[in-house]
Image (cartoon, rainbow, N blue to C red; front, side, top):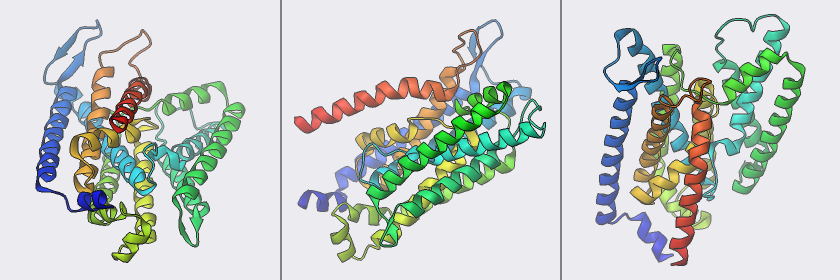
Length: 343
């Protein structure tokens, strides 16, 4: 109890460490963004760092802005879920949002294929992805209630069930649609930072993530107090159930806009909070901002790396890269966490 109480009233030493970590993460995120803007790979495979030609500058700017939104949104959503559900393995996709978005896109592709509308070189799937994600989130929150409010364990179970049902729906639709539509869907499911996207979609996605950050920071003190337990937090005036519902909606909406923008990009929301916690500490103001910055670094860093990787079939999708790198990284972090507790 005393240890938790100490963590709530953040000591000056911890505050200084947290601020220093945030400054370092912010500078690193800026450096990674500049690297992504400057990196170039010629058709002959020659890699160089140079300021891009004006004709290509807009494409790279869109990719960087998308990376800021997607990485920040997933990192922050993961931090909120791990705090709210008190589960270090919680991630944004645990709410079934990703599977719901995938089902929405697959349904739109199936409808478009039957109407002969999926023949364009590029089709914007952000709206059906958003609708599917919000629908899945609403269903999870409705099923995860106990006594009228979201219950952490029930929400987790509801998320697993909804994700499984959506996955089954996607497999059924993939069986029914033509082969070329399956290829388009698999490409979307691999995840990518769009270099061509509407300014309105970027703006709306950015506004959702920014609003989510503001809401999370406004409730950060309540999250700190909640470390004492639900009963103690209620005694200290924290509306535990209302806070949990509000922040679950915030995390779900941020995940929805990121999936709609870039497709499913795994492991970011799982790893970013663990890294931020080790660097910035447990105090929720610095922890939440740190998770956002680490998410940005991971996504834009992965997108920079994939620019120089060509396996003969084009650039490696960012979703594949984050899984290949994120899986071993998470196992390493988990091993260090276990050893630190045993020591």
